[in-house]
Amino acid sequence: MELLLVLIYVSICVVIFKLFRIPVNQWSLSTAALGGIFGIALLLLTMNYNHPFTSNARIYFPLTPILPTVKGRVIEVPVRSNTPLKEGDVLFRIDPKPFQYVVDEKKAALADAEQQVDQLKASLDQATAAAGKADAQLQLAQQNYDRQNELFQKNVIAKATLDTYTRNLDAAKQTLAAAQAEQERARLAYTANVGGVNTTVAQRRAELADAEFDLDQTTIRAAGPGFVTQVSLRPGMYVVPAQFRTAMVFVNTGKRDQELGAAFDQNALQRVNAGDDAEVAFDAVPGRVFKAKVRSVVPAIAAGQLSTSPSLIEPETRTAAGRAVAIIDITDDVAIIRYHLAPKLRLRFTRSTGTIFRSSAKSCCECEAGRIIYSSKDMGAEAGADIECPLWIISGHRSTSA
Image (tube, rainbow, N blue to C red; front, side):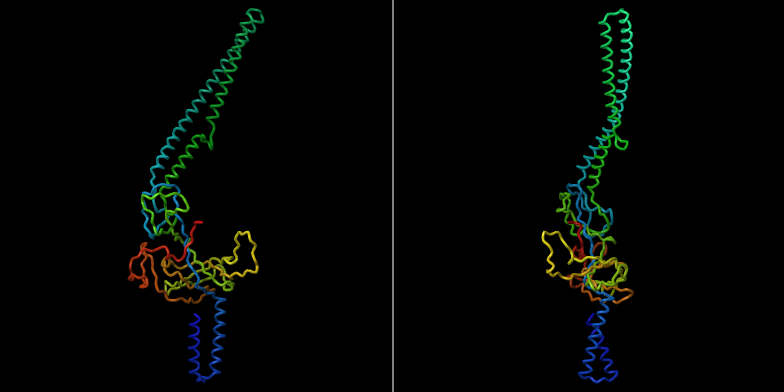
C-alpha cells in the first residue's frame, strides 16, 4: 500500500512539473520530496486511525475429538474423509451384540419385577385375610373366656378349666399381633414406590434405560455440520472412551462455528466498535472483497494474562505490547473460502465504505462434492487435479480437547 501511494504521488509530481514547467533543481525536488513525505505520512496515520488495516487474520474452525461413549470393536466405518456431513450422519458403528444381550437381560428383569408387584399385592391380600382371621379367633377366645370366667365365679368349673381358656385368649392375642405385623410388612412392600412406581420396578426401568442408552451409543453420529479428516479408523479396531485415544477428529463447519479473528495494534482499535462495517479480502480469492461486520473486540490480550504461579510478578520485566483481537462475522457467502489453502487475509474496518488492499494469490482451491479442486501449478499437480483435502489446509482450528 505504501509503495502504491508513493508511485501515485511521484506520478502527480511529474505531471505538475511538466504541466506548469517547473524547473527541476535541488529546491523544487526537495520541496516535492518533503511534501510527499509529510503528506503520505499524514494520510497513513489518518487511515490507520479511521480505517485500521491488518493482514494478521485467520478463520478458525473448532475441532471436536470423537470419543465413543462405550468401548467395543468397530464393525463399520461408513464415513469418508473430507466428505461434508450433516447432523445425525453415521460416523462409525461398534459391535452392538454385547449391549443387546444386556438390554435383553434388563428387559427380563423388568418383567420379573412387574410380576413381583402383582405377587406383592397378593401377599398383602393374604396377610390382610390372615389378620382378619386372627382377629375373629381372638374375639371367639375372648367370648369363651368371659363365659368360663362367669361360671368360675359361680363355682361351676374348676380353676384349671379357666386357666386353659386364659391361655387360649393370650395365644389368640399373640396370633393377631403376628398377623397384623405380617400385614404391615406386606403393605409396606407393596406401597413402596417412587413417583407412583414400585421401587424395584423403577430400579429395573432405570437399568434398562441405561442399557438401551449404551446400545444406542454403539452408533456414533455427527453432532452437527462438518466433516472428518484423516480417517484411520477401520473395522476390527477396538475403541475405548479415553481422551488420549480419540477415534477420529471432526471439523465443525456450522455457521456459528466459523470465527474470523483479526489481530490489530491496540491503538488501531480505538474507534472500532461492535456493529462496524468491515471488508475482507483473501489471498486465495483474488479480485473479490467480502462484506463483514464486527461482532466484538476481545477486551483482553495474551500479553496481559496471569497464570497461577508461586512467584510474584516482577514489574521491571518488559513484555511485548501484544495485539488486540477483533472477531469478525462475514456477511457474504463464504462457502467458497472454507477450505482455502492460503489463510492470509487482508482485512480493513470501514465506518462507512473503504478500500481493501489485497495481493494476488498463487494458489487457491474450492470444495466440490467433498473433494478439493486445486487450481495452482505450484501444488506439483496439474490444474484441476482431484486431490483429497488434508486437514492442514484449513485456515485455522481450535480443539475442544484439554
